[in-house]
Amino acid sequence: MFDPIELAEKTRRDVCRDLSRKYYRFRPARFYGGIATADCVGCCLRCVFCWSWKVVSTPKTSGQFYSPEDVARRLTSIAKKKRLKKMRISGNEPTICREHLIKVLENIDESYLFILETNGILIGSDESYAEDLSRFSNLFVRVSLKGACGEEFSRLTGAVPEGFDLQLKALENLVRHGVDCHPACMISFSSPENLDALRRRLKAIHLNFGDFEAEELIPYPHVVERLKKLGYDLGHYGIGKGQE
Image (spheres, rainbow, N blue to C red):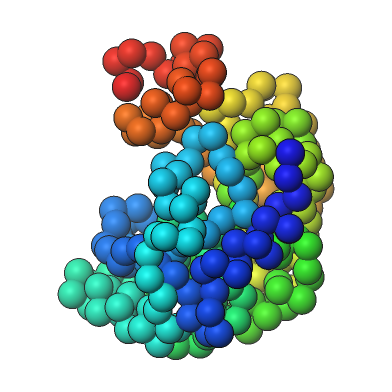
């Protein structure tokens, strides 16, 4: 098991350069009713179900560097061309290059809703990150929980169980600083008992968080193949042959 904070720092050296960050593609996507998307390089977790594992596992050789202004310009161009009102950074973990992310947000027109998809680890480890994000009125933060408890988190990500508490701490920090946010949870590998316990923990942070977004495994062929290589019994998790 690894410390996700330490892995974030190691990854930062590969994917952050001054105010620039590595990205591997820019695209419109169907999610959220249509959204302009910048897919970044570099993550501090190693999720077994990761759909962009090839990029996550090769930060040194994947993508190329873009300035915050370049990223904002490309997202805006996609949004205007496709008549979209939402933008996001996705693919890997957007919060690793903190100064870059803040500069991207500063360059996005407030008429667009910017959705920050994050595992929350770095926001949970440093409350000032949530304070920085509170400056942006057009920001919505979606914290994607990896499992329903520390044990599940560790099994699914390879990180120490304490990382799960940082994910919940991120939600606490965001709420404390008035940042619009909501939790999502990968539930495909969770027991009903653990999900019930998670719901109680989330409601203690904010009453609305008990109704978290349920995130289920999308059985992309390369994801299924990786899970098989890692020894997962896909049938046990309801991933049948027809889904593959």
